[in-house]
Amino acid sequence: MDRKSATSTMASNDPNPLDPPGTPQPGDLIEIFRPAYQHWALYLGDGYIINLTPVDESQAAAISSVKSVFSRKAVVRMQLLKEVVGDDSYRVNNKYDDDRTPLPVDDIIQRSQVLIGQEVSYDLLGSNCEHFVTLLRYGEGVSEQATRAIGAISLVTAAASAFSVLGLINTRSRNRPF
Image 1 (spheres, helix red, strand yellow):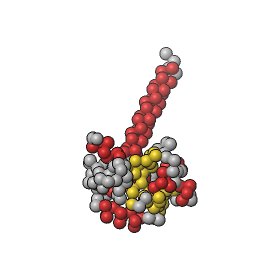
Image 2: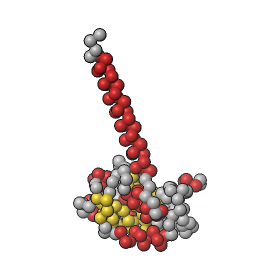
Image 3: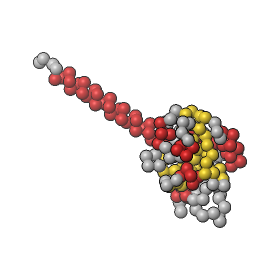
Image 4: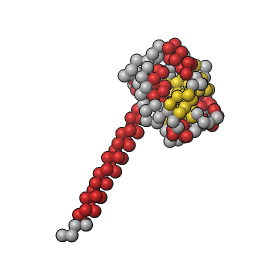
């Protein structure tokens, strides 16, 4: 199994070899595959994760809500992994371990526990659930998902601008009297 495959199926912080592949270890990043996006959580241990959920929803409704993507505030919650995943699938994905060094697991857990129940700012592109869990694991918030979205928005904006300019040029040339 190559390094990338190992990273996507099991923790890279030397999990117990008796654990089946993909069994989360404390401090692992959990990628949950929702129908329209990926939700991210951090595994705390004993079946629990920490993640961001919308402020204005009940805990049960927040588990699978697409509304969380459009919220401006979020609440840090500790929940059972199996309840958050529901009918969706997930994987352990410590994909940034090749470029960043994870903090010690005890520090990750301690930093996480202090935040449980707190309301935090949420921004899909600048401060989302992936930023949140990578900040806990590495001390730096990163989100490949947000970077891809920003790139797509830039491309659409550039294309719209180009079409607008072309339309303006075409309109002016048709309106010339000569």
